[in-house]
Image (tube, rainbow, N blue to C red):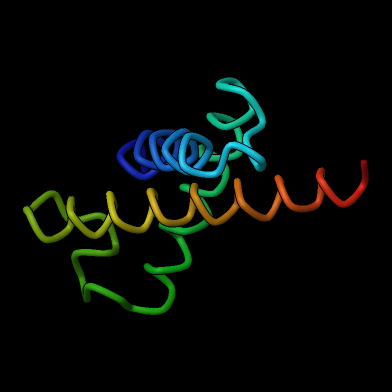
Length: 89
């Protein structure tokens, strides 16, 4: 879970750097990324992506699945929150 949260924060900040118009600032990107990382990693686990490794295994496949799920989840949630914020303005 910690790997998913950290990779989510990194994914959120990378997405914020790539899409400057959706960026929420470093703190906002990190918070959105952490939340998205947790949700993305849990969603992959529930879908069974990565098999038993997605359920929290500490082998290489489990760690890579957690990093990928967290990073993508963080980036996606940042993009969604950034778009909503932009539409509200």
